[in-house]
Length: 332
Image (cartoon, rainbow, N blue to C red; front, side, top):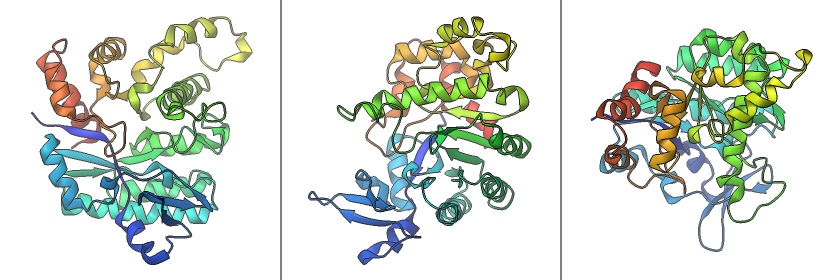
């Protein structure tokens, strides 16, 4: 049975090569911590360590994919390289390098790789231009972006041209947090900025795009919410209840948020059979796609085997999640 992974990151080789021997990649550097782990240094700030697999060559990645039974990685740049906090010219330069490398991988191994680009979202015009280049010139399928841009949500009117452009291009936009989440300012312990924060951020993104009118303004927009959409499906009834109590001028939508659940796609990274079954039953199996979070610490150990082992899923549902939905969505 075929498998297409929508949630597979890449730390581009151009970063590793440029930062050898103390060099920099458009001002980005890297250092080793006391345990010898590689850590990017961006804007003078050291990020958390990259996993060993982040440095792997495409050939090493392919061997790992084979061992896991994964046929296709839809490559997306490492989210630490969004660089929204840096000058837009720097974010554009790193985005272009990463996007060019991903494009080359998709052309060298067209049966094994597809790609999503990175964009300088702090400059809307530059982001639109780079998204157009990604889709039209480089053959990428869309882009991966953060839930916010330096704290600004993407339902702000200034971002509507971006959403219109993504819709017109038929580009898939994958939401994935980068850097801190809404939990980070309250507690940094116990890995909670990741384990709880990621899920909270995704629910906020859903609510903002829906209640901010973006989904109505762009009816053909294609969006995937990573990590199963976070808490979206599990809190949707509360969103509906809150929407019902809003004064007319307080909402841009005329139907409850739950009516928009099927406007989005959701990856299957929810970790338990019961959670995946609930996601499928809530949004429909045709809106759930296969993802693994390769190669980071929250990755599924044996993702294809896990899906195939689930007794509550029919064979048809497993096929839809593993490859058919992604094949239809991205034309793979």
